[in-house]
Image (tube, rainbow, N blue to C red; front, top):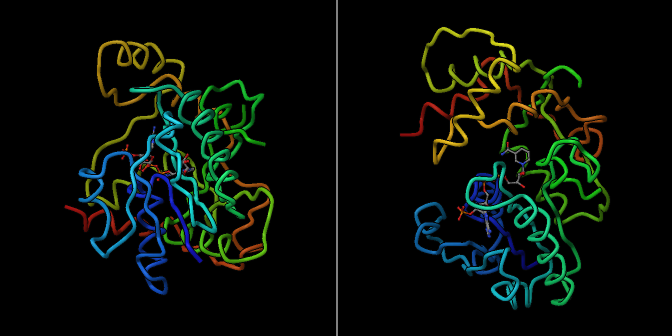
Length: 254
Ligand SMILES: NC(=O)c1ccc[n+]([C@@H]2O[C@H](COP(=O)([O-])OP(=O)(O)OC[C@H]3O[C@@H](n4cnc5c(N)ncnc54)[C@H](OP(=O)(O)O)[C@@H]3O)[C@@H](O)[C@H]2O)c1
């Protein structure tokens, strides 16, 4: 099976490629990237079929999926820094779907976001919705996600599936576990979201790469847990735990 992965040099894309390479010839994996030179440092130099395309430029996508059986579309932006959700997440995805149809691709796997819906009041979730609780998250290890994507590529599944790790965690646990993963210790102080919003508003207007945006703070109002969690029920994968060292690989990165 020939597979194309958009956003191939991204976090999900490169972890999926690492898994596929275990039993797939590199030449059967088409890595679609925006910038070939930058992507070269992030992709394995294993002889992948690397192509360039920008999803906001449909002409650049032309032919990207010719000869391909299945596409995994991972391109998305989580904040509107250089481009808009509408152009990349919505219209970019539509352009990918159109080109995949034109090329006769029989399967497309799209990475969405929990609670993504066209009617969402939050711009990012609206943009991820092809289809105010407390802030709870259910992080899924990227290696387990890669297993899901591989199963989706190879199995007869169709539909939309919500995925998460084994247990819900609070934002505080998320931060503490991330610090533990990096092997750093910092005091943390809870701050109500409404108090952070003016600062985030200022960051966005004065910094090229703000540490937090108003849109990201908004997402803390949304329940980020899967209902139901398809990871074990549909895919038969027992997700690895997040708490207690699930991010220990972070400390291994330079
Ligand atoms: N990571 C998570 O925790 C998480 C959780 C839930 C859902 N998701 C979803 O999973 C998907 C993948 O996430 P990720 O963490 O792998 O994201 P990522 O690391 O930010 O990768 C995004 C990829 O999209 C590419 N891209 C951005 N704009 C593009 C454009 N206009 N044309 C072509 N390529 C473009 C980026 O290329 P450049 O390197 O050139 O910028 C990059 O390769 C996304 O749909 C995301 O919403 C991720």
